[in-house]
Amino acid sequence: MTETMIELRALTKRYPGRQEPAVDRLSLAVPRGDIVVLVGPAGCGKTTSLKMINRLIEPTSGQIILDGEDVTTTDPDQLRRRIGYVIQQVGLFPHQTVESNIATVPDLLGWDRQRTRARVEELLEVVGLDPDVFRDRYPRELSGGQRQRDGVARALAADPPVLLMDEPFAAIDPIMRTRLQNEFLRLQAELEKTIVLVTHDIDEAIKMGDRIAVLQDHAIPAQFATPEEILTAPANGFVEDFVGTGATLKRLKLTRVRDIELTTDALTGRIDEPKEDLRRRLQDSDWTAMLVLDEHDVPRRWLRAPDFVHDRPVAQLGLPAKALVEPQATLSDALEEMLVGSAGVAIVVDGRGAFQGLLDVDDIITSIQTIRDASAEYYRAAKLVDPGEVQG
Image (cartoon, rainbow, N blue to C red):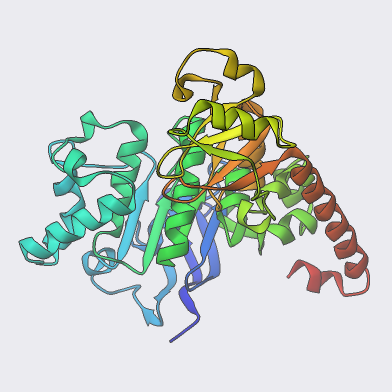
């Protein structure tokens, strides 16, 4: 089994009447199970390159190798059934239900009804849409985030080894965008698909990509490397300008919450515990606040000593527990959540929403210092080797 799932060999696209090619001899190898992000300025050929992989746009010349097979001249319809495709506006059929949209490719492949329905239910669960609630709804009855989840489910329906994603999170509000990015990274950790993703946003590329291709005009790669390499050793002035300022803060998108040692001995209580018991435990502790969990360990409230003077149920005391992040979230996500939360910390929860630990600003600052130290060491080491080797 080859370690390269997709290989583009001198892939070129010329349009009639245009002197210069839209894509000029693009060669790129996408490792199996990785997310490779194509990023660059508008009009540089990102989307054209992506669409040539599944031959929605036919290449003028060059080769597309999929899992060791040259698919440049095979039946394009058969090729597309092996590749999931997610676009910015989702592309759901408005006259079909959620279930029918997801079942599109399985139906084309001739799956029986029982197998298709089981797959639809499985995928709705995977993307966080309750089948009993959403199965029979139409796209117009869904929010933007729900439509995007439905689009991902449809792309995964026939369990393709490859996903192509064209600006999949661009048309969504910033808060939902961050949540969907994190949800997708969680899914990818389980599914291990090979993904090529197009974006114009370098921050999104750094967060989502295992490797990033920074493209210049005509889809000529200025650098193809890991996010860390692009941030610490940009290949040229074009990459440096495209990455922009604030590289240290951008590196917070490289570190996941799961990589940080959490505070796991936080003072917690149960929402159904007697109020006096909670008050006494808080008073006897060194903590200034208690995190109250429900019967499923889901964080619900923050309680401080003055809150107990009010004659209300525990579920109505204190402040709501906000700033919830999952382990796959980046430290940048966690910092943003801290700024809008009520306690100055991020509450880390698992995929079911159950409490895992706390992350505070000091943890973020320590991580920034660690990143700076590692970067300084990288540059010191880089001076000892050939610059071409560092860039490659």
